Length: 418
Ligand code: GDP
Image (cartoon, rainbow, N blue to C red; front, side, top):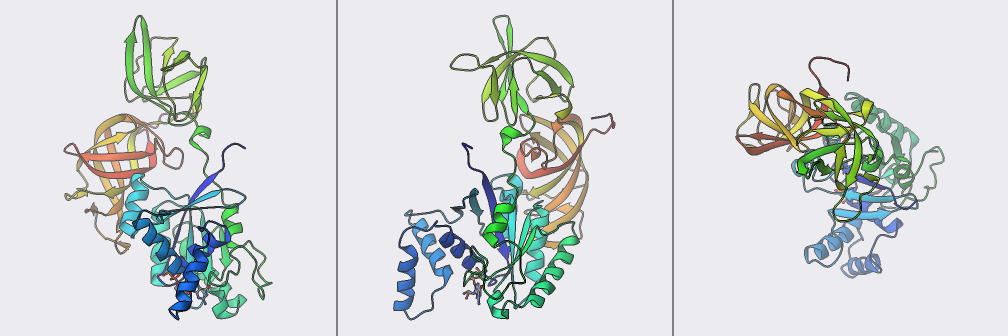
């Protein structure tokens, strides 16, 4: 395989439950630390008469980052034999939610850390809720500091049951629950002694067992039209292939109109006309029929096409001062298209600063909620879980960006078969 898989992960948990320690340990065990760094920090700690903490190491890396010397600790990378990992860090929930929902940073999976001696705490619950808000389906629960409870199986089982029942409340199921000692290294890469009752994977083993999302090239075709040019007698439809592939001879369906035609030729500048092209490429194409196509249409293959949506339910991160509420007129931008519409409902508003649910049907600045929007004309759209490009929207009010969101569901109101 030419390309290595990349999995983007986030580690969350109550403060002091061992996040920095786990990150430092993972970097060490996977050989991701700069040469001699660990020894140096250990020596400095010893000289100061302080017991070594893995967080010192991360702090040192952070300082160097600030000075522009080494790694960016908000984008920590490590690799296993299996694949590459990107550890996404965010200064706080608000930034994290905003980045995830507006597309600045995406995580594919999460590790939820729980201190074995402390058990599930309020912050643990909030972080679990955060993972749910972000739509993350792959969650590893790591019961850390197992050395503090002598790898007691009953303690582990109790926490496992507690967290599973809480996650179950929003339809989330832990993919793995791993006992761990981030400090001593137990079940990070190697198995721990005195815990023969546990037969599951180590934390690195569990990460390797998660599913990486399909690359954009492996998803169904989405070709949003950027422009239509008249060239001599020919009409060239130009755009960027956001996902999938297309080839000369393919039958395309253009949404939202539903018109179909075959690709007669592909055009690329500069260079000779290719016979096929894939995700990430900007191309032009000509069709065998003179159907109506305009900027904003999305070409796809037959049955695998996006919805011509008149109704969008989206999880929205709101950025504007004016509230988003029932009746707010909005413009929804999606790929190269846009449509005006009106907010029909706002549900599950959450203040991400403290991750509490607001009992109100409006979104204030920096709030997150589920918003139902009726569009005045259809837009080609996908649920974010189906296609991340056609499943992301920008919301404008009075021509200013006021929010961003991921599409939870897209419906053609007339219920015609999709
Ligand atoms: P964070 O706030 O979640 O980043 O927590 P830290 O990684 O800074 O850890 C908080 C404290 O817990 C530190 O003193 C760590 O040494 C300690 N700690 C972390 N992991 C373990 C562990 O597996 N076992 C024990 N006994 N202590 C740990």
